[in-house]
Length: 198
Image (cartoon, rainbow, N blue to C red; front, side, top):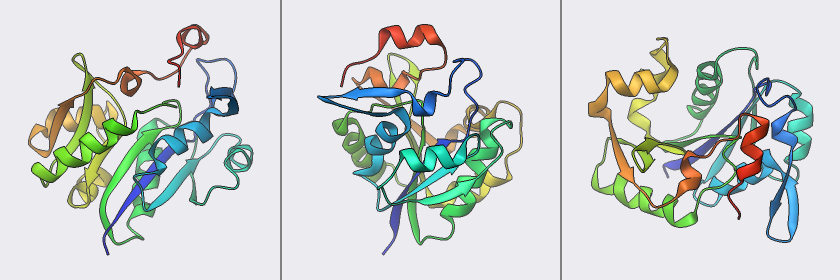
């Protein structure tokens, strides 16, 4: 059976934040979890398996995700995010794939209805990646069909995946969603002042 595999990108050093954001405490309802764990849980419900790409303070990130089940992939957190994307995609090829969900660890929230809207949209536009868009801005997670993985692995251009989609618009579709969390990452200390509540 072909699987949908989640790839959580958690290798970065959080230089702009000034503290290691993957482990920042994050309120979810009445509980508190590390940001990386909240981001993991945000997409895990629509994934048959999970891959976590780690780099900086890798063992701490892995510990913060316990007791969740996932495949660990090590990458260099000093490199651009594309290196982590490639590491995760290479691991994903170990699975019999239908598609991958690509999601950064600094996007802790995604509404469940958004994920299901993306799946339904992908079913209508088979062979296309689906990128959620909120008020004209593209966000995460990105749902990528298996047939595009080799092209993405071959991509080494400047600008990461955004540049890839710009050069290959025929491979993707944007889906307008009413979900601001899809475009809310947390890069700097001031971003934490405007958290989207769970």
